Image (tube, rainbow, N blue to C red; front, side):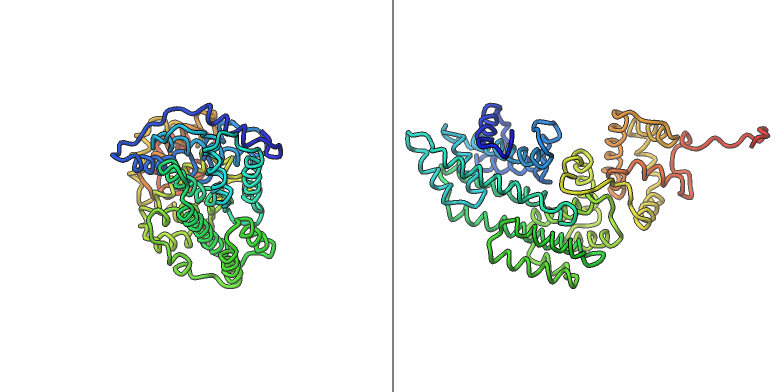
Length: 438
């Protein structure tokens, strides 16, 4: 499937409709409630919460990584809409054309969406030019999401999540009412635009946490703002705020002052954490920024650590796709101050760590092998990573060990702590006093 070849959207939608399976309905009294609960659950389970559908990693699309990712997003959106139609028990209809209505609305072209919907009641087939217009709008949107991976912000993940929320809620309205109310559709488009602008504000502030961005980075950020296709007035205001942030760090409390709902607060925190992970390190200034942001958004230190575990776990499982929009070489470099902080955490939680290591089955054995320099198979590494997630969930302060490179960091710290952290199997055999070569 080639984005540059006409008809790609038609082929994609035919495939999704042909593969559609019955959906398990959440146990709620109203159809609308079931659809909303399904949407919330699916945004997380599908990976759309982080802008990266899990099916990308399953190799269901060919082509460049950016193309794979975009096609997976469109495919997942379509599946979500079809499931919502089933949960709402919407009357049978031309589902492919109904999906075109929703994708036209997603692109911001409400007139095109209304025109396609009006023609659905007619016997004649939908003219090809309407399909072509929707396809072109989505293709343009695909090209805008990549931005500048070397210097820009990590906007793709948050932008896709905002669009996923928008698309899902539009689908609920559309299949529930049998029509797409233009006033509410416009209101949702405006909300998604403001959500993206807020994310730009926060990530720009994160980019300025250590020092003012370089001039190439500034140009890249401003170009990404253009590519978001925001309403002109909102885009102008956002560009102005970004330019001011380049010269003087904005007050974080001012940046997020309008954020009230827990859903939006968690969205901002998760996207900031993901952005801080993808370059392979988190500086002391970035860590301080994240702690300040979490406090302002009313997340306790324990809540922050739990969110970190969720983000780190998703990042570790889908890193090859998340890194499509970065130039990260690895996530092993943590910085001396961060290592010292983890060391203090380990000292405080020594007994709990040992208990969790012993209770997670093979973890102690696998860590022993790794500490001794023995190579691990891919399956052993997978098991060790998963069991470290279990340790991190039991002791949220140790979430960093579940992040990429956490295994190596765990072993490295064990060698410098002022006590025997690991079980006796990890320790070097003491020298034999009778051995004259010692």
